Image (cartoon, rainbow, N blue to C red):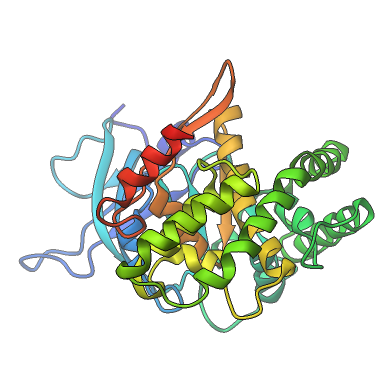
Length: 376
């Protein structure tokens, strides 16, 4: 198709929701003009734990990026096959901060880069809904600083505000009337801020949220009691010398309160004990502090529930692309650090696998954790 124009080629290759991205040299080589290459349908490989540790999210972000499944629209680079499927890698030195990150299969991405893929549904947490309200007015960015979240302005992105409504605003399990009011509030805020967004809402969303809250209430109450039990021991900085005692206390408390050892909250507690000097992001996720109370435990469990919901969505709808948008770096580090994968439905229910990184379970603690689960 040698006579095909770049405009015609773009119309042929692009699908609804695809991004068109152009990469250009800052300056040419050997006196030649700068070269460029334009792609459509590019997908970015999620980033890993250490890359999130290194990222300074409130500053212009520099991260390594791998991409694949891109189709070439036009280029002036000699020898490039326009009919091929492109992949590559580069270091992104952006002018944008990324105060919000996207948690998804395989890791994380700066928020704006997560929606370059077709069919992504954004699940914003409460902090992100607040950021959307602050950064946008009628679809226009009204803040002076630049952030990857601003890339939502011109997109017909799918947004489901379920997490905002489920958490509530009272540091405790919300009543059905509050869930409904919170859902309406989130819908209004997002519609005013991002009028092009497609809100994934309806009666089924509210019924689903209320059903999920009630179904998980007994387990949440047990986990809340578990956290209140172990908080006095885990609030102060831990050390390797104290590990065995703290580890035993956590396992005994989980057994006492009927909390399965394979749950994320137990893994987070063990990580908080295993990494000396409060070095695990799990400790921040659990929000331990002097005077730890039910509201602190509820907020921690609401955050972990958002990860559990994401896992359930991946297992139940493997073809879908939900992405949890959060401004909580500790929660993002925990997600990337536990490396969840293998989401699937089996005869006895939903299951998935975890592969915690050394930074969360150092030394032999990962083996101890696995053995404890097998022995339960």
